[in-house]
Amino acid sequence: MTSYVEKEWRDAGSKHFQDLALKSMITVQTKPCFTTLSKLISWANQEDEAKFDDSTIDLSVHALDESIKRVTKLIAKYTPPINSSNFTSSAPPIKNIPTTPLPKPFLLLAGISGTGKTRFIRKQVEALGSLSESYCLTSVRPDWHEPSDLLGYVSRLKGQSEYVSTDVIEFIAKAWRSIFHGGFTVSSKVDDCGESKLVVQGNSEALNRAIPYWLCLDEMNLAPVEQYFADYLSIIETREWDWANSDEFTYGCDALLSASVINHQDYTEQLRKQLGFKDEQYDELWQLFCTYGISIPFNLIVAGTVNMDETTHGFSRKVIDRALSFDFGEFFPNDIDEFFEAKSSPKTLSFPIYSQAKLEKFETVTADPDASKTTTFFKVINTVLKGTPFELAFRAFNELCLSVISFAPENEEHLAAVFDDFLMCKVLPRIEGDEDKLTTQEGEPLLETLQKEISQTLSSIWDSERIDLLREGKEAANKIVTVQCRSKIKLTAMQIKLDNGFTSFWP
Image 1 (cartoon, one colour):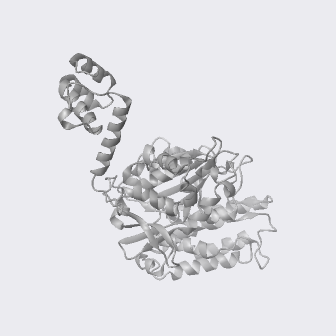
Image 2 (image 1 turned 120 degrees about the horizontal axis):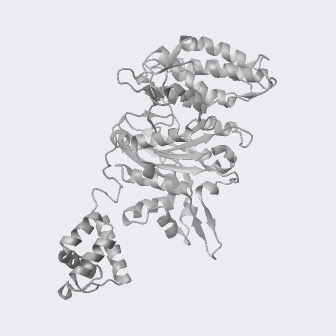
Image 3 (image 1 turned 45 degrees about the horizontal axis):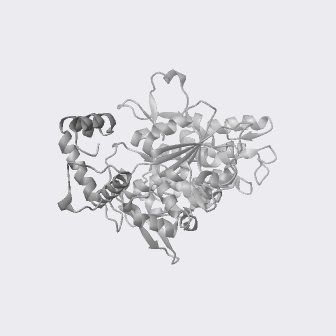
């Protein structure tokens, strides 16, 4: 095979070449293929051009290895339009589908088994991306107790340190590569405290093209979430979106995987390869990771599927406060009449683009341009909860504001629907206990008092239907889906449970 024999090369090429175009070419252009490969290998191994002999070919392992290395470097060098100094490149086209940005990138989908929670996440991925690129399914094990179970760990079993990565940290790295190639600038910046950190900068056009990367933690509460998910729960609150104007932003976040772990002389190159940053084009990006650590990428959405039974763990308020909790059966009901032909479908969701609510953002909210109604609603709810373990604080108010800003309600009924969903996602999941625990500061039954106050605050939708913010009709002429007031239904169900001795939000 090292000398040109047409039949041997034609037969071998058609049998072994994986590239379909090359396999087709070798059968009719055998000689040109042979001589091209011969010259390429000679060039890659730095032979004198005057001594090239295209009637022979060097197929040794060393020669082929050197050829692959040099061609890879050449491709990286001339791949437009990457600028290695600021990591800016053009983004690939994606499906042009309107999306609904979430106020938070961490979801809990709670429901009985078989309702389609995991399938829902897969459909969200398929709407904008592909399961092979922007989806990671991780099955939570009952013996997980450390963040290392999720993010990897250092092993010294082989005599020296090596980092054992996981599917999760490799998927997070993949989300970072999507940002790198998506028209954004990744660099370092000194913050207001004089600390330097890794940031992403870009504009709304690039952001509109970016697709969310969905990490699905299946059966999330088979293990204690507060233990194995502790690092993420802490770091998620450090996300900062800073919009200089309506078009340009800076995003930053503390490290999920610290620089001291990444920049270890024993395994940093091995880890770089494992995480997919081996190529030369990632040199400066990897150096940033070695200096500042790997933070949560802005395009990452974590969704945990949850079943509440005797085999699973409950959630502390630390977890609930940091997540959007969905009673899946209430938000995305299993309507058997629509099993064969659905009349509605979930809206396509995307990652948040704000972290801190600002008053000027309410200017685009027709139903509450000065945030006064949002503030009043929150104070009414928190007055009932004051002095109980379920009292709300700044984080909850910020997330209520972000929800209003994200959905931008146009009228009173639309605004009431946002408030209703906030109660379902952020307030009621916190409430559980017996009659002694579910008592207001004045000694009144908490659920009854809450129901009375909410019925007045949400009077426009309490006894009627409201718009569904997360589903839409299949028919182009009738996209609006309406539902009953969700918090009314849930409060009634929770009160019935309490009458039997103990209540909770979870189905």
